[in-house]
Image (cartoon, rainbow, N blue to C red):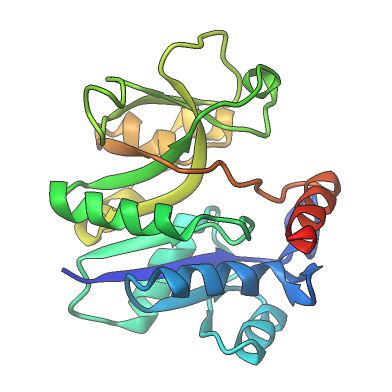
Length: 242
């Protein structure tokens, strides 16, 4: 079974414009993510973007990137377009790695890929333990509720996803990496955006609203996603200190 890794990226993020090209240790965030995904060694890695500057940056750092439409509503639409442009016939799974998590754990990428193949799952994602109670109220940190504990099942199904929650039981920090089997990805992008998806700004709710199961693997670490200037400065400090 073969996996293709696609990293969606664009410069026009509303909260932190230009973030993929912000530098940490002299290398852009997007190129850090590309290198992590490549070092996981689960398959070919490609960045999908609407911006020529991102393509230039990734290629100058030895990576591979392709130009996609500016009209996508979600990163999933972008990775599907990239998949059709690449026109690879022998791919079974597509891994969508977020372009704003330069500290994503390589072992977590490998583990998710293995679990998808072993269980022949439709969609898989990652979740980390919640380390402090403030995370429950922080709407920038997406939470996932799982149907069974990780002790009962190492790859349980997601019950739902939320930005804010009063519950604490079986709630984890959702890490934005997805692995799709190819047929499920095709089906997913054919559905209209669901009401819950639009209200919560969480595209994974489209899958749940259309009765597509999402399995969840427990991650070793919860990487900081770069959404704001504060996030960028925090992760820059951590990575440059290392």
